[in-house]
Amino acid sequence: MAGLVDRKASMSETTTQRVKASIRLDISVGVLPPGSRIKLQELTDRYEISAIPIREAVRRLAGEGLVELHAHKGAVVRRVDIRFVRNMYDIRSALEQMLVSLAVGRSGDDDIEAIRTAAADYETASGANDVQEMLAANAELHRTINAAADNPEALRILEQGWELVLALRFRFGFGADRITTIIEEHRLLVDALARRSAADAVAITREHCDSACHDLVQQMKKADIQ
Image 1 (cartoon, one colour):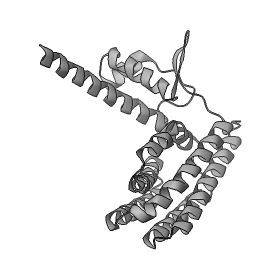
Image 2: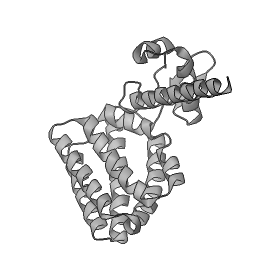
Image 3: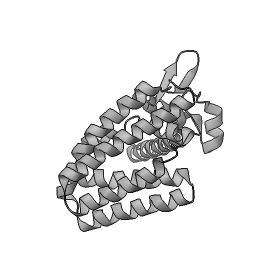
């Protein structure tokens, strides 16, 4: 009996984690944009699953700051503004500069090749004007660098709430010259990592974060989002 209970608990936890990942993805690609209400019935239909794991997943996402729980409105994807975006990029810039510095000394040839491949994938996706694939390739590039740094606690902090920024990027897109700038910054970053130059990698990472923040803020201002 105890074994059966343990298996059921494990299956329930796995289901909740899967649903949580699905909701996070829907937030990051703008299916559930900031400020939108999370409707339980819509998610049960969308994911073809019962309400119980969805409720638990939403509760956990609220604990991570992605979702807000209101007494009368229920669950709502957290609203964001320009101040939020700037704060998130300040945090990301500081952490990524630290992580890329660590990655220079800890990454192997396979890591460098994976980063180079992700940069190439970004260029291919940009040529096809596929924003979702661009975001995925960009995430893979930074994920590989950050994983090589081998600081899981920093990664946990880095990812908290970032889906909201991705949702904004997916919604507002990029400025006229931003994609060209990103491609050049990626190339410079790959080169700095391949040369094992921590100083150059840190400087490029700082500029990469600063320019990304500036571009997203400008896009939000054009849409009259303050």
